[in-house]
Amino acid sequence: MGPLFALAQTASRFGLWLGGALILLSALVIGVDVVLRKALALSVGGADELGGYALAIGTAWGLSAALLDRNHIRIDSLYLLFPDWLRAALDILGLLAFSAVFGLIGWHAIGVVDQSLTAGSRSMSALQTPLALPQGIWLAGLGLFLAVAALLLVRALTMLGRRDVVGIVRLIGVRTAKEEATDEVRSAEAVHMRIGGEERRS
Image 1 (cartoon, rainbow, N blue to C red):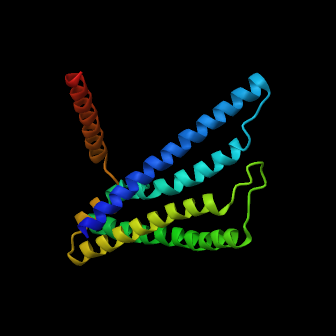
Image 2: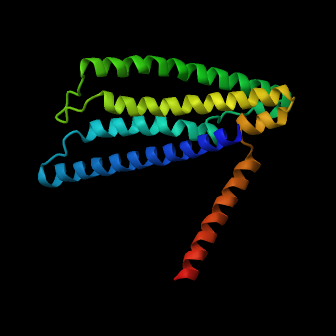
Image 3: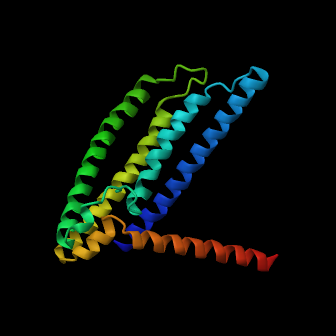
Protein backbone atom coordinates (compact mmCIF):
# COMPACT_ATOMS: atom_id res chain seq x y z
CA MET A 1 0.00 0.00 0.00
CA GLY A 2 3.04 2.26 0.35
CA PRO A 3 3.46 2.93 -3.40
CA LEU A 4 -0.30 3.47 -3.77
CA PHE A 5 -0.30 5.96 -0.91
CA ALA A 6 2.66 7.81 -2.43
CA LEU A 7 0.84 7.92 -5.79
CA ALA A 8 -2.28 9.26 -4.08
CA GLN A 9 -0.24 12.00 -2.42
CA THR A 10 1.41 12.96 -5.72
CA ALA A 11 -1.91 13.04 -7.59
CA SER A 12 -3.53 15.06 -4.81
CA ARG A 13 -0.73 17.63 -4.83
CA PHE A 14 -1.13 17.94 -8.59
CA GLY A 15 -4.87 18.43 -8.13
CA LEU A 16 -4.26 21.08 -5.50
CA TRP A 17 -1.96 23.06 -7.80
CA LEU A 18 -4.33 22.60 -10.74
CA GLY A 19 -7.30 23.84 -8.75
CA GLY A 20 -5.39 26.80 -7.37
CA ALA A 21 -4.09 27.76 -10.81
CA LEU A 22 -7.58 27.62 -12.32
CA ILE A 23 -9.05 29.80 -9.58
CA LEU A 24 -6.23 32.34 -9.91
CA LEU A 25 -6.63 32.38 -13.69
CA SER A 26 -10.37 32.90 -13.40
CA ALA A 27 -9.81 35.74 -10.93
CA LEU A 28 -7.43 37.34 -13.45
CA VAL A 29 -9.96 37.00 -16.29
CA ILE A 30 -12.75 38.45 -14.15
CA GLY A 31 -10.47 41.31 -13.05
CA VAL A 32 -9.61 42.13 -16.66
CA ASP A 33 -13.30 41.97 -17.53
CA VAL A 34 -14.18 44.44 -14.76
CA VAL A 35 -11.46 46.88 -15.86
CA LEU A 36 -12.47 46.66 -19.52
CA ARG A 37 -16.13 47.22 -18.66
CA LYS A 38 -15.27 50.29 -16.61
CA ALA A 39 -12.63 51.81 -18.87
CA LEU A 40 -13.65 50.87 -22.40
CA ALA A 41 -17.22 49.59 -22.07
CA LEU A 42 -15.99 46.25 -23.40
CA SER A 43 -16.43 42.79 -21.92
CA VAL A 44 -14.58 39.49 -21.90
CA GLY A 45 -17.44 37.25 -22.90
CA GLY A 46 -18.23 34.43 -20.49
CA ALA A 47 -15.90 35.51 -17.68
CA ASP A 48 -18.49 34.65 -15.05
CA GLU A 49 -19.14 31.29 -16.70
CA LEU A 50 -15.43 30.42 -16.75
CA GLY A 51 -15.17 31.52 -13.12
CA GLY A 52 -17.95 29.11 -12.17
CA TYR A 53 -16.22 26.24 -13.94
CA ALA A 54 -12.91 27.09 -12.30
CA LEU A 55 -14.44 27.22 -8.83
CA ALA A 56 -16.20 23.87 -9.22
CA ILE A 57 -13.18 22.13 -10.75
CA GLY A 58 -10.73 23.70 -8.30
CA THR A 59 -12.84 22.62 -5.34
CA ALA A 60 -13.24 19.05 -6.59
CA TRP A 61 -9.53 18.62 -7.36
CA GLY A 62 -8.53 20.07 -3.98
CA LEU A 63 -10.70 17.71 -1.92
CA SER A 64 -8.28 14.79 -1.89
CA ALA A 65 -5.37 16.94 -0.69
CA ALA A 66 -7.56 18.37 2.08
CA LEU A 67 -8.45 14.82 3.09
CA LEU A 68 -4.83 13.66 3.16
CA ASP A 69 -3.75 16.73 5.12
CA ARG A 70 -6.73 16.30 7.48
CA ASN A 71 -7.88 19.85 6.81
CA HIS A 72 -11.51 18.85 6.30
CA ILE A 73 -12.25 18.60 10.05
CA ARG A 74 -12.47 21.83 11.98
CA ILE A 75 -14.97 21.29 14.84
CA ASP A 76 -13.06 19.35 17.46
CA SER A 77 -14.09 20.83 20.80
CA LEU A 78 -15.27 17.53 22.32
CA TYR A 79 -13.31 15.21 20.05
CA LEU A 80 -9.97 16.04 21.66
CA LEU A 81 -11.36 15.07 25.08
CA PHE A 82 -12.22 11.53 23.98
CA PRO A 83 -9.94 8.50 24.51
CA ASP A 84 -7.97 7.28 21.49
CA TRP A 85 -10.19 4.24 20.84
CA LEU A 86 -13.34 6.38 20.65
CA ARG A 87 -11.62 8.97 18.47
CA ALA A 88 -10.46 6.22 16.11
CA ALA A 89 -13.98 4.77 15.90
CA LEU A 90 -15.47 8.20 15.20
CA ASP A 91 -12.78 8.91 12.59
CA ILE A 92 -13.59 5.71 10.69
CA LEU A 93 -17.33 6.36 10.96
CA GLY A 94 -16.85 9.94 9.80
CA LEU A 95 -14.75 8.89 6.82
CA LEU A 96 -17.36 6.28 5.88
CA ALA A 97 -20.16 8.86 6.00
CA PHE A 98 -18.06 11.45 4.17
CA SER A 99 -17.22 8.94 1.42
CA ALA A 100 -20.83 7.78 1.14
CA VAL A 101 -22.11 11.32 0.60
CA PHE A 102 -19.53 12.09 -2.07
CA GLY A 103 -20.03 8.65 -3.59
CA LEU A 104 -23.70 9.53 -4.07
CA ILE A 105 -22.73 12.88 -5.57
CA GLY A 106 -20.27 11.14 -7.89
CA TRP A 107 -22.87 8.59 -8.95
CA HIS A 108 -25.33 11.29 -9.98
CA ALA A 109 -22.50 13.28 -11.59
CA ILE A 110 -21.77 10.34 -13.89
CA GLY A 111 -25.37 10.50 -15.09
CA VAL A 112 -25.13 14.25 -15.66
CA VAL A 113 -21.93 13.95 -17.71
CA ASP A 114 -23.36 11.04 -19.70
CA GLN A 115 -26.51 13.02 -20.46
CA SER A 116 -24.46 16.04 -21.57
CA LEU A 117 -22.38 13.84 -23.88
CA THR A 118 -25.42 12.09 -25.34
CA ALA A 119 -27.35 15.30 -25.93
CA GLY A 120 -24.31 17.32 -27.00
CA SER A 121 -25.32 19.96 -24.46
CA ARG A 122 -23.66 23.37 -24.63
CA SER A 123 -23.78 26.39 -22.36
CA MET A 124 -26.27 29.12 -23.23
CA SER A 125 -23.59 31.82 -23.16
CA ALA A 126 -21.64 33.26 -26.07
CA LEU A 127 -18.89 30.71 -25.42
CA GLN A 128 -21.18 27.77 -26.25
CA THR A 129 -18.99 25.55 -24.05
CA PRO A 130 -19.61 21.79 -24.44
CA LEU A 131 -20.87 21.11 -20.92
CA ALA A 132 -19.42 17.61 -20.81
CA LEU A 133 -15.90 19.10 -20.82
CA PRO A 134 -15.98 21.06 -17.53
CA GLN A 135 -18.34 18.49 -16.03
CA GLY A 136 -15.95 15.68 -16.93
CA ILE A 137 -12.95 17.46 -15.41
CA TRP A 138 -15.00 18.14 -12.27
CA LEU A 139 -16.06 14.48 -12.13
CA ALA A 140 -12.43 13.36 -12.46
CA GLY A 141 -11.59 15.45 -9.39
CA LEU A 142 -14.39 13.76 -7.46
CA GLY A 143 -13.09 10.40 -8.66
CA LEU A 144 -9.63 11.17 -7.32
CA PHE A 145 -11.12 12.19 -3.99
CA LEU A 146 -13.15 8.96 -3.72
CA ALA A 147 -10.11 6.85 -4.63
CA VAL A 148 -8.03 8.56 -1.92
CA ALA A 149 -10.88 8.19 0.59
CA ALA A 150 -11.14 4.46 -0.19
CA LEU A 151 -7.38 4.05 0.19
CA LEU A 152 -7.42 5.83 3.56
CA LEU A 153 -10.37 3.75 4.70
CA VAL A 154 -8.64 0.47 3.82
CA ARG A 155 -5.50 1.62 5.57
CA ALA A 156 -7.46 2.69 8.66
CA LEU A 157 -9.31 -0.64 8.81
CA THR A 158 -5.98 -2.47 8.48
CA MET A 159 -4.67 -0.48 11.44
CA LEU A 160 -7.87 -1.29 13.34
CA GLY A 161 -7.17 -4.98 12.80
CA ARG A 162 -3.77 -4.44 14.41
CA ARG A 163 -5.41 -2.41 17.22
CA ASP A 164 -3.32 0.60 16.23
CA VAL A 165 -5.83 3.23 17.33
CA VAL A 166 -3.16 5.92 17.67
CA GLY A 167 -2.13 5.31 14.05
CA ILE A 168 -5.75 5.68 12.92
CA VAL A 169 -6.07 9.02 14.69
CA ARG A 170 -2.84 10.21 13.10
CA LEU A 171 -3.98 9.03 9.67
CA ILE A 172 -7.54 10.35 9.46
CA GLY A 173 -8.18 12.22 12.71
CA VAL A 174 -8.15 15.88 13.61
CA ARG A 175 -4.75 17.54 13.48
CA THR A 176 -3.64 18.76 16.87
CA ALA A 177 -2.36 22.27 17.45
CA LYS A 178 1.11 20.80 17.97
CA GLU A 179 1.02 19.04 14.58
CA GLU A 180 -0.12 22.21 12.82
CA ALA A 181 2.62 24.23 14.51
CA THR A 182 5.24 21.63 13.55
CA ASP A 183 4.09 21.70 9.91
CA GLU A 184 4.26 25.50 9.83
CA VAL A 185 7.79 25.45 11.25
CA ARG A 186 8.89 22.87 8.66
CA SER A 187 7.36 24.91 5.84
CA ALA A 188 9.12 28.06 7.06
CA GLU A 189 12.43 26.20 7.33
CA ALA A 190 12.03 24.81 3.80
CA VAL A 191 11.37 28.30 2.41
CA HIS A 192 14.35 29.70 4.34
CA MET A 193 16.66 26.97 3.00
CA ARG A 194 15.43 27.51 -0.57
CA ILE A 195 15.99 31.27 -0.34
CA GLY A 196 19.42 30.72 1.18
CA GLY A 197 20.37 28.33 -1.61
CA GLU A 198 19.27 30.81 -4.28
CA GLU A 199 21.29 33.59 -2.63
CA ARG A 200 24.42 31.42 -2.56
CA ARG A 201 24.03 30.56 -6.26
CA SER A 202 23.65 34.23 -7.18
